[in-house]
Length: 182
Length: 196
Image (cartoon, rainbow over all chains, first blue to last red):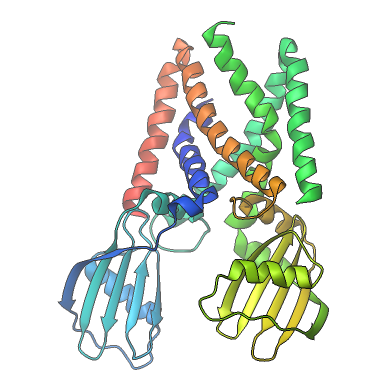
């Protein structure tokens, strides 16, 4: 019970995000970006420097450290995407004139939920990223534990064995039909 | 039947019916959460060629790919759930999938050639397919029914949270630790949102 109460925020997020992903045709729309900041960034990078190195330095300059990816676009422009769960940023840096443009993704609840749903994995960024990955593993362990403990608690209540067996058999039967046919 | 008993029974029987899905969603999250480990251990997906043949279908740029993908499958004696996309302007790829197996049809427009490849079955792929499957974009009753069950699982989780909180509240001796768990979890989640 306490495990479930503690992880209820994660479970609610996974449930709501699954619904939006299952009905993507209703919620899909291209991301919209709004300009947040524009400035000149004076820095000297070696020609052909790793875009990740440049991206990390730019994010540190902007105070936006965290999970990101970076790529070099045709023409030499560096594009950095900062994967903030609530407000992702797109940062464009043109080394030739030092122009730095920061854009923020307009918040949309379905996109936010899907980002949270897909966020996982260790070693993907600094700070609390690994702690988040651990929390995802904790949810996984809890889900398996709830299935097993739920079965045990059902079996302990003799009055519910018949209907419990029937609903479990119906669910398992339907699941098997799906496995065989689609 | 009292309201309290109704809540308890909904919590229980919904769980029993959706148990295979809930269990599979839990277990199948492991290959997603530890993708690097599975990639290192099992390598990239393996494909073997089923056939390679001359083929032609009109597919102008910007055309709706879905009917084109359906036609490619039908012309080659295949059916089932599929996705279709253009990895580049010369190629159309149709990905036909069933639980445990998949067929990839790659149509090269410039060469007027079609290559079909079958995936090698792997248990971790089956799990990720079970996890990721959903949506109402296939023209098939059973695929739509699967998507309905996915919605049921989502609604079921929301109901388990609501009925679970109700049942916890009915146990006064558990309220203090329950508040600590609920507040601690909610607080940590907000910290993640603010700092990730």
